[in-house]
Amino acid sequence: MRTHTPRNVLQFAIALLLVCNLPLGAKADGNAKVNVVAAENFYGDIASQIGGDHVNVVSIMSDPNVDPHEYEADPKDAIAVANANLVIQNGSDYDNWMPRLLDASPNGARIVLTGADIAPDHLKDNPHVWYSIKNVSAIAGQIAQSCEKLDPADKGDFEKNLKTFDDSLDPIQKEMDSIRQQFAGTPVGLTETIYLYQADPMKLNVLTPWDFQHAIAEGNDPPVQSIAIANSQVTGHQIKVLIYNVQTVTPITTNLQNEAKAAGIPIVGVSETMPPNEHYQSWMMSQLQSLDEALKESAK
Image (cartoon, rainbow, N blue to C red; front, side, top):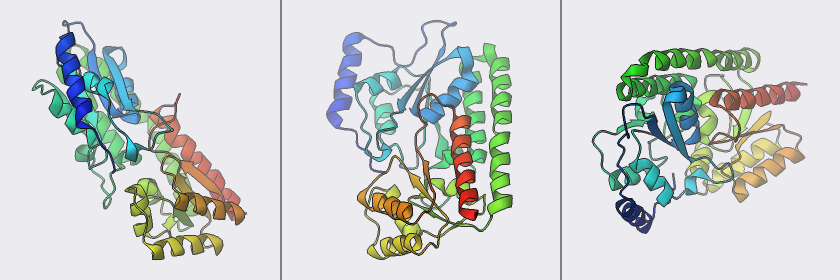
């Protein structure tokens, strides 16, 4: 992913930390909350659900209007990371700015979780592991264990909250199962790889060339031939639904959307970061329900 962290931002942040004499990830006392910093807001939301009143959570990347591929960390982010007891990043070259922030404030007591390393389910060159329910459950389990290590006195609450979280994933899985049972094999188009973690287990037939999806996900122009194929799949009504990433918009993907509208093909938007005023579960369910409606509309 195309992410950059200017060296002068980190230098300024460290200077500010030294001037203000801020502690590097140390809790003020035994009763203090666990300070959690999540690179992305969906991980922050999961940490909040598991940690409850025992954690303070800061989510760095949360603006739905920002292309995550172009995100640049700032001094505020560096300060938050420096004071964190637990940091959650995605890894897999998705949030490359986070390791730089961590390196800028070394702290051997800080726990760092990397979603892509924890995730048991991986797709080729696809860092969007949080779109897999299996992966999210595994990551949530590691968040709970980390909170227990940092705050052993509240272990019971973390375990209870983890079970509640895992149980709340069941309706999402049931919705995916329902879509698979009704629409397995239905040809669809994707503007990028992010939705493969759900399209594949739902057995949707993704026709868009993988080279096209991968290039868009990486912030590059797709091969000319793949663009032509993707466009012809829309204009020729070979796909029934177009699923597009609303946070990675280029002239190429916009043209594809316009062609889908002109062809009367339903369009479903998905996002990389969680929309405001949502939880992970409601975010995933809302997108799945929109997809379900679009598939039903296309089947008429």
